[in-house]
Image (cartoon, rainbow, N blue to C red):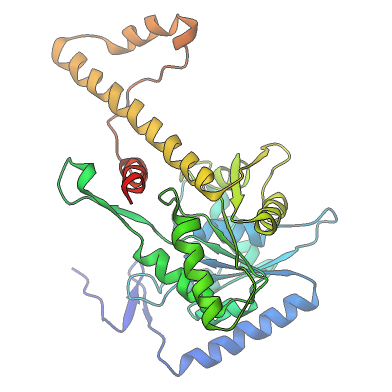
Length: 346
């Protein structure tokens, strides 16, 4: 068994990286500032992606790969990850042009390597002071749902501590005209009634009178053979807390994603966008659980459920009925319905 040193961060492959100390932060900020200066001289928009997990790392690369009609890169992306023993290793890996996530999709490795080493449009850091340079911040930190009792979702609650901490940090450091885009799947109402007040309070503490520009557009990432395409070449839903944020997020997503072939749906309020994701995943979880129950019945009673479903699918109104899988699981589906129920009573 490999035991990690608390002053180091151990990658999944076993490579050890020393955690930064206080004296490192100033030099790190100077490094980022010089890269930003160069990017600004090339008229690039500065985008900070907060959280370099299985969504944030690939989203950062997709944004960094954005090009205009002439084929010129238009964004410079700074991926920011907190320097914890659990996560710091992602930063040096990305800065070497290596993907911190392993995927069946070969484009993940190709994309990150190209953006970091060839186009030099992507860099990673642990210093959140990089937020002061951002024109846009994309938030990809976790929002979990904690069950208190096994099998009883109703007693659980949303765990937004990481998201709330991130929003406070953002509010303390960004410029007033910076757009903040939450991609995280959250409980309906979170953007308007949790995140926005945090930003407003931080702005007030800094003597800033402007209203923070906050938007929501949930990811639909599907790690697998179409990992990159599930972000870049897929339908998106977005919304803003007010008209300026809504216009800004719409423009940003049109630039970054393939909205020509996969049109963007713009909602009036973030709670509508948030609810869209929760209903979408809850619906799928319900259908999967329903078919799993009949799969168990069929197995116990010697019934060929595939034959049964094919017979049902002959009826036009039931032609989209899915076949059963191994059950219901994963990270998203078991928790997202809980986020909806929690929001109802929050």
